[in-house]
Amino acid sequence: MISRYEYSGGVWIDIEKPNEDEVRSVLGEYGISERVVTEILSPTPVPLVAGDAGAVLLVLHFPAPHDEAEDIKSQEIDFIVGEGFIITVRYELVTSLHHLKKLLETEAAVNSALALSTDVMLELLFAHLYTSIRDHVTHSADQLDRIEKQMFSGKEHQTVRAISDSNRDFLHLEATLVNHEEPLSRFLKTLSERNFFGNSFEERAARIAADRVHVVHLIRTYRAVATELRETNKVLVETRQSEIMKALTVMTIIVLPLELIAFIFGMHAPGTPLLQHPNAFWIILALMLAMCAVVALFLSRKRWI
Image 1: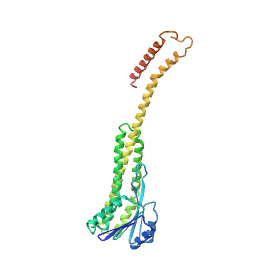
Image 2: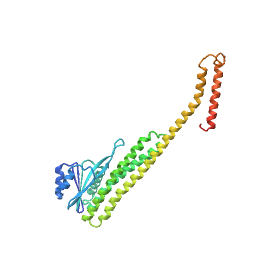
Image 3: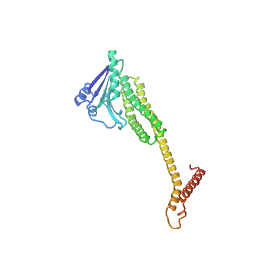
Image 4: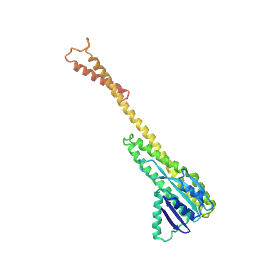
């Protein structure tokens, strides 16, 4: 599907799930070289910057929205930028670009001509893409708040998996955006050197790069929070387990002498004390209670209970 959004002095063409004929038709319209066409027609597993005399190609991968039970997936977006045009090629729905298209359609319905230029449109594209990632990070941060409340309400065992999932989420997001740094920088530098948009583009390029850096810093901050929560949760789990082991140990120390007394008087061997005594049961019970009191007093003096 090919969508066109014309603005002052240029056009943004968005190609979603295209076939080869659609790609060749659009890129041929702007005289894009065969090398760029070849890169567009096949998936590119890593970020890439390429181009010819009239356009520059940038291939980046952006994290896709996903359910909590799913791993983060990446979506490839190919940007071809020249003087007066931007072409984006993608092979699946990208939510942030879909929202931007709806905004432009609404604006076009009100104003017949969009008061934009190509460099402004390029900045707008990246702003929506990085804002989408920022929103995802903020949502994950809200998850951390809920995990923290559960953790300190006695559910530290249930939060172990949730903390690990959040930490993994932030790690994948950070890795994706770190991979953007070098190719995005070269892409923006090449556009500035080609002087497609004039001197004002340097400021816009700086803002595009700053958007990425801001999101990376945000991810690193929340990843540090998730790491601290994991360490705190680990301490709480270990403390809880220590308390359980302490309780079991105290019970064992108290019960063991009682079991020993019961075993001795239960042997019924010749010469066993109180074997024929009519009040043997009550005497043995009193002995057990006395022993229990002595052990409890001993543990209390040692501050073990």
